[in-house]
Figure 1: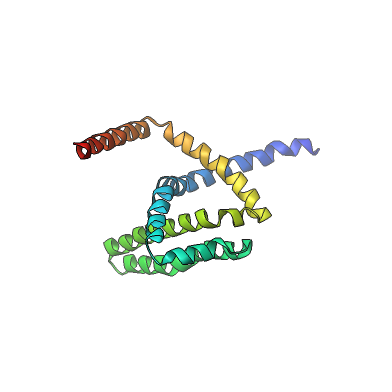
Figure 2 (figure 1 turned 120 degrees about the vertical axis):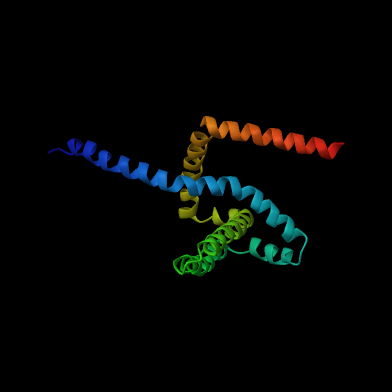
Length: 173
């Protein structure tokens, strides 16, 4: 069998794997996309109005791999919290366990988003990180474009915009 004849077989295995990976990663991408920027801005506001501003300035001045270590630390720090939440669920406290997981996800996303915002220039100086980021952004954009095309998502976004306009109108009176 020639070199070119084996290519279709390889593609058949790659395509299902890619589809599965996209299906599994899409919910994470959706949460990160919709929560990332608002949570990052909220934490940024908190940092600007607290003594944490000096820590953020220090982090912004780190060299690339120092920034990478700082950026990766919250995910590692939250792992024991999430494992503890799973233990709560296993011990018969599902509401508490899910609450801890949701809280950890919100806090973790806010911290990671803010750290990325602060360390992005340094992180993009790392060649492999820059290549990964260059791959990630178009992939994430394609996933988000596909989700935004769903009629239900369009309806929710329109309703949300209408609610925001109505509430804003109340405060203008």
